[in-house]
View 1 (cartoon, rainbow, N blue to C red):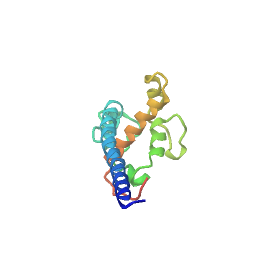
View 2: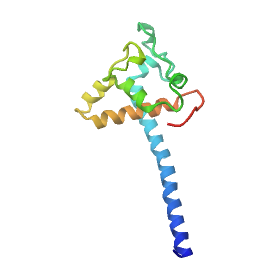
View 3: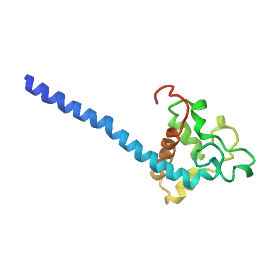
View 4: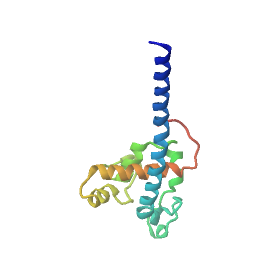
Amino acid sequence: MSALKKSVTLRLALLLLSFGVLLPGICAADEITDGKAIYGQYCAVCHGRSGEGNGPIAGFLTTPPTNLRLLSQKYGNPLSVDQIEKFIDGRADVKTHGPRDMPVWGKRFYGESGGSEADTADRLAKLVAFLQSIQIGPQTGSR
């Protein structure tokens, strides 16, 4: 391979790599924004606008809502997307989390989407992206 061809190939590879690195960051910002809107609509009434467990109806609940800003202390940072999605979804029994006092959002999202698993999964992923963005613990590893 000629030096010119190698140079062009290397530049193309770097360009594609930069898009691969930059685009997920842009998508993540959109996911966080969308997740924040979903959170505000469904979760803030119990967990509060900031996620600290102090929503307007928190005082009326038998079990106090979790401070969602501290999830990373229990589940690591970054959060385990699969684990947190399953807990929010609620359709599969997650015994390690104790009693199910929270609504089963997977059923709700599935019904509102007209039975679309893809839409349900998208909403859950966006919620987790938002929850990740509000963690106050230090990063402990990679996903």
